[in-house]
Image 1 (cartoon, one colour):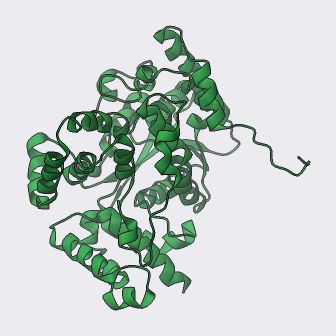
Image 2 (image 1 turned 90 degrees about the vertical axis):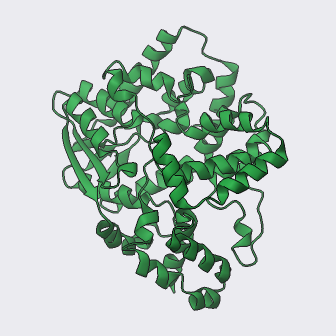
Image 3 (image 1 turned 30 degrees about the horizontal axis):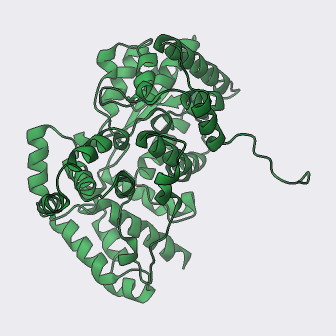
Length: 422
């Protein structure tokens, strides 16, 4: 090793290994108080600023915890910012407003329309400098721009899901897989095929009856779990927009990626921890943080992520899984910390993702933009995608027969980037 060689100052894999070797064995109240203390320390350090400072607030557990602790440490009202949607299935602004009012923050909100999205799309290639395809990049940019009107630094609640078991796949998916696995494979596949054949209207009706938000996406995930032969395959299906990308990419080959090695993480004995580790190594670093950092820096806003304090992560990986996932809910210990600052009636609500109604927008004001990029002759001439499959997917989406919003957004972001570069 020479003086110029990089030295790793902290390693997630080493942290996980150390957590397994030195598990937390004290009482739960000690763990809650310890996490509260570590988060206060991290947030207090990140609130040091010689420029105006605020925080993103969605009304979820993660951002609410960050903001609640920030407000407890500040003599002045913390400035908070949120994005809302007129489509109720995607709107968290009302929850954020309740949290802001309870904590007494100086709160700002902006409701996003299709027209707002249209104005942002031409800038996405410049902002991300690659065909980046997470449709929540649009509200992330808009909330960053809103925030930068008042402050120069903003704290974010990102990483709470990966560290404390917040994603539904860590809980609901595992339970569903174990239940479906009791059903013979042939019957499972038959049931999945029947569900797949249902039109969107039937899914929406099912959602209304069962009071499920975004029923199409949730049923699609249930189908992918039903079709999976093991939990590793179920995990891959749940995190993938397209389970067979080689079918739609000309000359494409299935790759054995880091994601395919869930079974090899032998040190972690439960599937939930394996998924959390995998998400921290990939989804968090390559999607969530990239999305946040580039969107914010495009408007000269500095963002800070208190959950990524190494002491917080080190402590979290020492905790047993039942301090993260309990009673069919993730982030148990984080909820207990938040109860120190807010009543449970505000905290206890179903988890929502930071998504946008791109499915409806593609049939509305984004239709002409998408149609131009998905033109049959253009696809054939460029030679990257199987044009017939893409056009069929697009037609199914427009007709309402299927919801292909995420698969189409992947292709559209590539097409948009390619057209600009050419």
